[in-house]
Every structure is written in structure tokens, then in C-alpha cells.
Length: 276
Ligand SMILES: Nc1ncnc2c1ncn2[C@@H]1O[C@H](COP(=O)(O)OP(=O)(O)OP(=O)(O)O)[C@@H](O)[C@H]1O
Image (cartoon, rainbow, N blue to C red; front, side, top):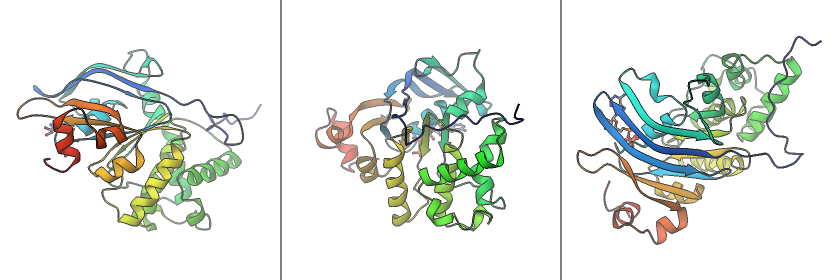
């Protein structure tokens, strides 16, 4: 018998269409100490779509995103209520492992954070160690190529895989981080302002990458860039925390409708740059 476990494979592009996952937040509330920052937020993030979370600074978008993959609980004073269901299963169920939630629901941060001295190759598969997945050399090679291709970076780095990840441009580093997330075959990819540290050209490349990626993974993105929300998402949720009250969703739905004919005046004002 082989000494290697089989890698949990990403769906083959040559085969049938991958089964995509839906993430459902139900009545999620959040606190830092006794400061309540989210109040009963419910949102379905449909399979195979990009959902954009928009709203003014401090209304709880990043907190909500971190709750979606159990990162909120890393902060000692943080607490929460409500449920997060991945394809109907509560990721906070005490019988479920934390590592499974993080593996199935990956995160890309505002600032690219590859391991700078580690090679591009090793950066890409760094998540295998964290999830305790062993793989043969051939399996790793295949996974590195597949993940970097999905992240739109393969062609640029295929001849320098042994060079350090820190030697790439900011936009390339962010795509390397996307590849690293994809290598553990997540069902959902959370992106917290992934382009805010990037120039317009790199931003466009990441946006194009997202459009390709949504065929294989459900995406949730926090963005302050209204044009970006319109370009990349099919669904939008507008968060707002009025003076002294916790954040909530004012309105959510089809992105085009949210921008052209929002139901709530506050959404209209925000998407038209009138406050925030
Ligand atoms: N680690 C923390 N400790 C205490 N309070 C926090 C912490 N992180 C966030 N908060 C508070 O929670 C509230 C929501 O913050 P959050 O970062 O989720 O908002 P946001 O909408 O993502 O803001 P931005 O768009 O500026 O990133 C804010 O009042 C913020 O001060």
C-alpha cells in the first residue's frame, strides 16, 4: 500500500461540473467584549456566485467575514450568536473540527501575506501541512500547477517555482495567496478587500481571476470599491451601523438591481457616493 494519502482533489475541469457550495448565515450577532457590532445578520451566499459585502467603514463587514470561517473566535474578547451553515451543516457545531471549517472556507486578506523566504512552489502547498495532508512528489507537482493556473499565475511563474514568494510583485503575491488557498480545495473563498493594496492593472487581473474561479468555488468579497462590486459580483449586501447601533444588513439582492434601483434610500445614497 502506498505510504501517501490521496489528496482531496479539486474538481477536474475535464469532468462533470463541480458541485458548488452554499453558505448560509442565520441571525449572526457579534460582540467585542460588551460592544455589540453585528445584530442578527442573515445572508445566503449562493453556490457558484460572487457575493459582495459593501458598506461604510466600521459597520462590521470584516467581522461578518471572519465569522464565516471561525476566525472571529481567535480574538479573546470576541463572542457571537447565530449559525453559519455550509451546505446545511453548522460550521460551529461542537462536533466539528475547527480545521475543517478553515479548510473548507478559505480566506484571502487585504495585504498579500505569502511566506516571503519560502519558494513559490512551497508557498502554494503550504496549506497541506496545516491540514495534515500528505502527498507524493507527482501529486504535489500537479497540485501546484493546478492551483497556480486557477489563480491566474502559472504562466508567469512556471519557470521560477523555486524562487522566493517574496520576490513577486504585489499583485502576483496576492494571486499566490489565492493559489495557496485553492490548494486545499476550499468550497468557499472569502476575500477581505483583496485588491486594496494593488495597482489598477493587478486589480483587474485579480478580478478576472475571480470571474474564472467562481466556476469552482463560491466567493464572498468585502470591497469599498463600488465599481469592483459591480464588476465581480452577482449579489450584493449593504451593511450599515447607524450611530451607536450594531451593524446590520439594510438591503441585499441582485447586484445590478442594488445599483440601479435599490429599495432603500440609504442604499441609493451609499452606492452613489453620498455618504460613507
Ligand atoms: N479586534 C477588535 N477588538 C475590538 N473591536 C473591534 C475589533 N475588530 C473590530 N472591532 C470593532 O468592530 C466594529 C466592526 O469592525 P469591522 O472591522 O468588522 O468593520 P468593517 O465594516 O469591516 O470596517 P472597514 O471597512 O473599515 O474594514 C468596529 O466598531 C470596530 O471598531
